Image (tube, rainbow, N blue to C red; front, side, top):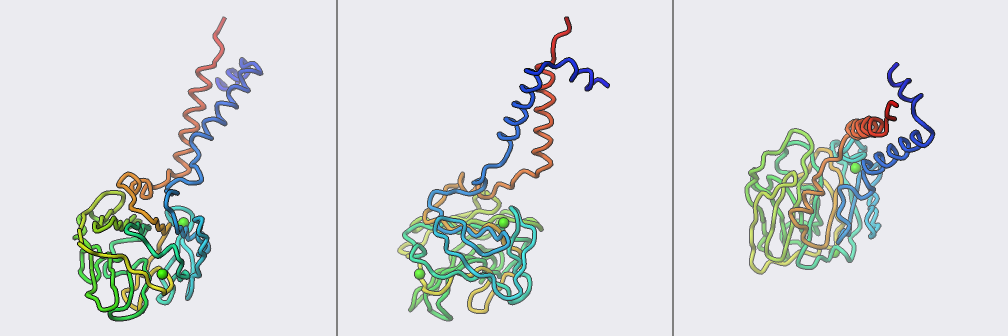
Length: 269
Ligand SMILES: [Ca+2]
Ligand SMILES: [Ca+2]
């Protein structure tokens, strides 16, 4: 065979050269541990990989209650909030007393409406609360809801114009002072300015999938991140970057290996 005859022609040095190039190629191609994560300002990161642990430096671990189970996610596993009473609950933390800026982002599934994904809610009516939602209370709109005792409740968000897929979608809700910016699948999808708005600081647990027994999101949720600053459009795009499938990585390594072998093929003398 051609490959066998080629290998016979290689010297020890050349074989070790090939090994070194293959290792280097694998190293370059391997996703880094922080792929898809922005560390700067990260105060909460729930990856949903078989537990409700917080992988950020805050380490504010939560609990997945009810009929909790996990399904394949965008990265590793995802929380499956699909069983009616299943939701994630995380103790309040001083770091959730946000300053003027905050970014809440996550992967959700399908084109759902009327769903609350992430929030803290002290109770009904004009209680202290905040949450991020889609299609609630208005179908087809984003909602960054903020409420302080005495109200009025603020439902902040433009119309969704970027079509969501039937599969995984990445959403990011950014508060940058009085400006609220909304992103779908890494793309900017509108902005609303609310003069004088201040972020709510509830004492209630942070929850995924439900607030006040209302507006439940009944689907998979993955890679929930909270940053204590406004992420840029470029950073949101990194969060929304879908990891390369392993097959594609192996393909790239194989191509590099073939190139390497051809490059050091001994000249016929
Ligand atoms: Ca995950
Ligand atoms: Ca609080």
